Structures are given as C-alpha cells and as structure tokens.
Image (tube, rainbow over all chains, first blue to last red):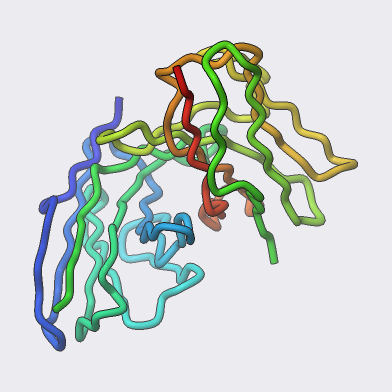
Length: 114
Length: 110
C-alpha cells in the first residue's frame, strides 16, 4: 500500500503566521492533492499536482499556495493564517492511468488558528 | 461544473437491516464514481469504484446514468459498518482531482 505521511497530526498557530503543512508519499505516484475536511462541508479540494513543479488550483485555493519540488513531497502553505482556516487538512496521492481516482490519504493535520 | 450530492447527513439503522446511502451527481459527460469510507480514528480510504463492479464488505453500488445516481447498498448492516461515507466523482479523466460530496454519517444500532 502507498504510505502517505503528514508531518504533524495537530498544529496550533496564531493569526497572521505563515504555516507549512508537509506531505510525503513513498510509492512514486504522479498525482498529489490537498483537501480540507470540515463537518457538514465534506472534502474540498484546495490544490493538486500531477507532476513535479506542476500545480493546479482546486475549488478553494484562496489563501493557500503549494510547492512540489520533488515527486514524493507536496507542501501546503498558508501565507498568512486566518481563523477561518482552522480545519482538518488531508493530503492524498494516486497514480495516473487506470488507477486514477484511487486516492491514498494521509492521517490528516488538524490545524487550529487562534 | 460537477457536483456530488449526498442528501442525508446522518443515517441510523438497526443491525441486520438493509442500508442505502444515496448519492446523486451532476455532470454531463461520462463520470467515474467512487465511494470512500472513514472509520473512527482511521484515515479515509477507498471502498469501491463503479468500474470495478465488485462487492466490498458486502456493499455494492450501481451507476445509474439516467437518474445520475450511485447509491451504496448493503442488504444486512453490521455494527462495524458505522462510519462516515463519502461519494466522489472524477470527471477529468485523470487530471482534475476528485469532487466529494458532503458525506453521510452511518450509525448502526445494535
């Protein structure tokens, strides 16, 4: 199985701080994703990447940026954290081709912005 | 734009009863549909995908293009089925990310 590891399980930050969420996958998958998960809102796609240095905006990219310098690592950056970015953040990876859509998720990072 | 609708936030059924989790989608092309499940304190994982046409843990789902639905069914619920279930749609054929519904919390009562 693909292992997707998110560096922090819980994170507490202050408003205005720059926040980095790190995600690493170990199976050489081309595609990586960042979602946020909120009760009653489900999962919403923030950004995704289909190759190194490539990134595409998802449904809610405002206030976020991403970086993919290496195939195995996909970072989510909150340029200036705000309280409405308090959420559970999920990273996922999947291969291309026929297995596209079979996402392997990390355990999530619960971010609290105070 | 594509959309996935799960009309029930919460569904509670008794053990042994049939379960049906509803999912409707909005997309004009040929979609690929998925069901994902998240058990308590576990990571989100794929349950099944419509192109596989297989039964996983007793669950099945049939894509109905006429009704634009992909309902998840199980004839006899078990307590270990209690979880959060998400329906998801892939419209891009490999480059757009999955669109998820808001999820249904299934509770199986003993």
